Length: 346
Image (cartoon, rainbow, N blue to C red):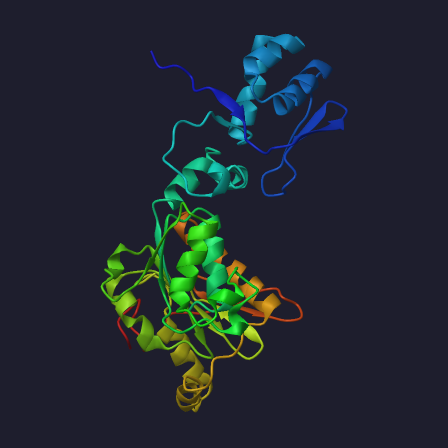
């Protein structure tokens, strides 16, 4: 005989009295829900369920004097509204700090089953490549490790500069070291559960779930051709004079690629190819602190959305972040008819 699953209030959901027999579950407008027509006993029951999460729905209803028939009717409504979810079963190991306690509740809000730890367990099985480990790239690496990504593959053979310090955790003692070695040591200290490896040239790119490339001035389409051909999702992060462009996040064969952006720029400005070639020979700009923090968080958020099975905002879009506003502005990027990354070129 199949037994009904044990239910619980979705973790992190506040239960608020609106008075007059109304209770509001949640405050986020995406999923908050108001239940009306409740008796005082039923209001007390739902409040107790929120405050005493170790007590079952049935135990709390009985203590508050809610009849079984009425209890089951309310439970059915709350299940359909997504307020009640099954008690989570066993998930795999997580690498996020505190066994995921800081992250699981919010991540559970984004799942029908409320099982935030399952999202973290899946992240722990993922591998992300990172190229370009200045201030911004180091911060992306630290963010992904803290968020529970299981393995990071690092590549940046340039030495740590004084201007790399302050954001992401590199120290004055790291100046002069090879960047990817310094960042690997940083992750070993701060996120020891995350495996951090240096790409020594023998990496099988197909083992990566996604690659982030931080580069200066203008994304170079040739840099991404191998990733595109192997079907590895990738995200360029371009640092310009006073802004950063995150995206597009490329899902090979399914969304616009870096070459599409380049071809569209050339359509709008016939001198763009010559300008881009000059930009790629220009000295790398420094990563201003606030801009780098905003851009690294945005980039890491796009990566995690991809790993978690959502559709990131940067798919088919470039997210431009500039000061003083600091808010990403999305610019749509469509597959270019002459590119052929999604359809045969015309």
